[in-house]
Length: 515
Image (cartoon, rainbow, N blue to C red; front, side, top):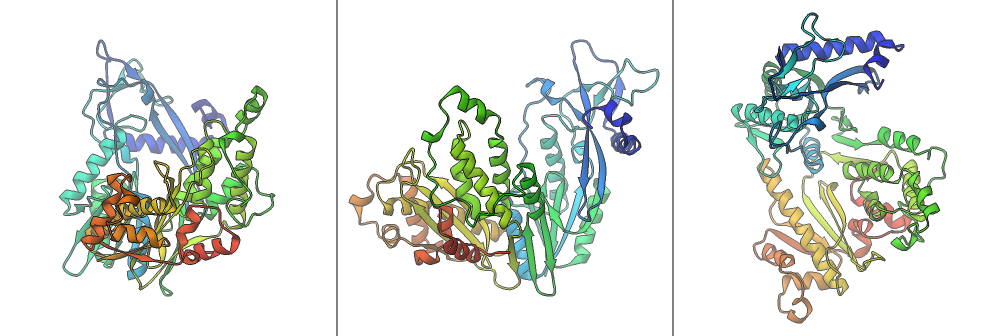
């Protein structure tokens, strides 16, 4: 239901009423507001009920009602000041899962009930009483908020401040590389906690210490213990501890995606984009009729949905999604055909997953570039992929900022960009107590490797921006080792260009994808 009246008059009215009462109980228990008269010169913000049917990991449906403030009515400087709040990076989640698989750790999941209600407000904010729950005889009063509420612009920030304070008071160290990842080290053990708004993963070798942390969290916040982690942010976590494997997939998400864009019965494709597809802005609509037709096509929605799959578990579609996203402002029929091609590829590969294994835990990086691949600007594409224990944990496919004058220059820039990510990964792993010394970064360009290792080729690189020479300092300090790999064996190839079916299969296998 979209509205309160619709919820209480529909077939599931009893279930929605119970959901709303459950929400009100949480709000009252938390002391979220008190009733008062509205001070002169103040405005009471409106609110509304938001209803959702949530599917649990076991397939059961849960009726959920959330009271949400209409935050768009807030005025900056009066109702709020700072609003930024961090969330855990996807790369961080994959790194933690890699550690869990490599060391056969326990992996537990918790959910914070009404997380935003725990944040304390710094401003005086007033809100109208919720529809259906106005106090009899006090209908003219308003709610003075004491705690943050969903919909308030500062709500995520206030919740994070509260949680961060609790974690640091509990002896946890916040990682500098990711402010939503916390570590606590014991004599022969440790605990890692990752937070994404109100979802958290807890990993560690000692279940007694994990249970102690769970109890501390439950004593301080209202928690829901979900037990061993089975899914996080739409990604399914399946695990066999006896075999020492952990799989991360988005099969259900992809199936919903295919149904949403009516691709369920379409022909399967073997690659993310066809090798014959040369997309450019010249194919964008020019006439009013063409633009009117494309305005009815859900292009941006489809690209955004594909992007989420790519960011989470599917590096194999990174280049294709990057290409079609260049035409979001004015997509044409050919561009839409490209989007549908990616969807058809996902139809045939929906079961692909990232496979993390027990044992090997070595960081490796692979870099590649495609000279002048963008037909409109002739900019080159940077691609890199990093694996832990031979399974991808970080990847990127992105147009370079400037036009490269040669393949060597394009590859050199790609190596420098990959090196920055490697340093972040090394620093993060070091914070987790998993130091990686002189990690290898592979490139299939011998000339770019020579340029990085030997600065004497002045005439070839005098025009290259200083920031890209960062790689030379890293090599000199032995922060990483730059090594040659055959182009036919480089998994980063699929991140810079459209490759053949055989090459794609090799890249997928090298990146630790299975299915």
